[in-house]
Amino acid sequence: MKLQGALIAAACCASSAAGAVILRLSPAPADGQDTAALTPVKLTVADPDGDLPAVARAVSLRRKAGGPTILQAASIAPRTAQTVTVRLPVISLQQTYVVRLLADGARPSVLTEQEVPLATSRVAPVELARARLIDPVAYEDWQEDLPRWPASTLRLAFLSVALGVALAGGALLIRSGPARLAAVVLAAAGATAAVCFVLARQDPIEVRHSGPFTIVTTRRTAVWSCPTREVEPVYWSPGQMDRDGMIYRPGGELTVRIGPREVRLFRRLPAGGAVQGPGS
Image (cartoon, rainbow, N blue to C red; front, side, top):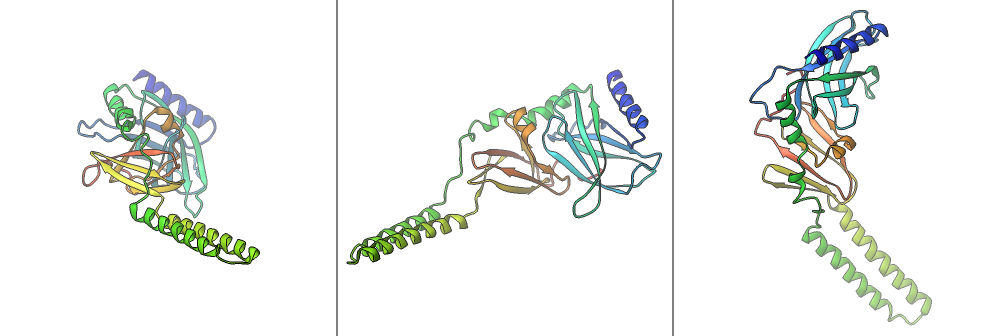
């Protein structure tokens, strides 16, 4: 606790010296029934000198080491102080987060940005959250499980190729050499275009469910979204978590970009969701 107090005091001193908004992170009261991967944390925002140029309509938080960005709605006016509960990926006793207060707009502008430390002495909740967030065993059965083309799509692609071969065979009966060559090229091009059209119509993202997990894979780079009340992210290593560019909106959706040879797991939450909405 002494270490936690020292870190918070240092952050406040630094903010005051720079004449900036004061941002603090501290552990929220423990709840023995809370088993969500994202840990509830208290975010305190204070602007005693009116340094905020506008009302902050959202708060963005991300581990300095990387990982999902938590984007939470807010309403923090200049010259006010407010404490809200946010849920963060907490996988160690001491971490630093990049916290941004954002103004409203089509492209929200950053009102203030600070690196804010979080320290806790609660070992058990951190270990529980880490075990739920980073679960390499859960990935063992799915690591090489790339998406499969549906039988109906493969059937249409095969028929397109067969039709192209038949047309090319018919083109060989043309006596004129240049005309025969042109006909064969057109048949091949038509078959290729037909196959590309059939494959392009198929959704590149494949979503499956197994046990408590939702498995998401894709045939090409694509963006997948899902309500945060339904799933929470699972990583196979801290490195994968650090590289993750997910946007996580409490009470809204999580959005993640997935590569063509990437497998992502998400743990399904109980009906109603284990993660509370903004300000809970």
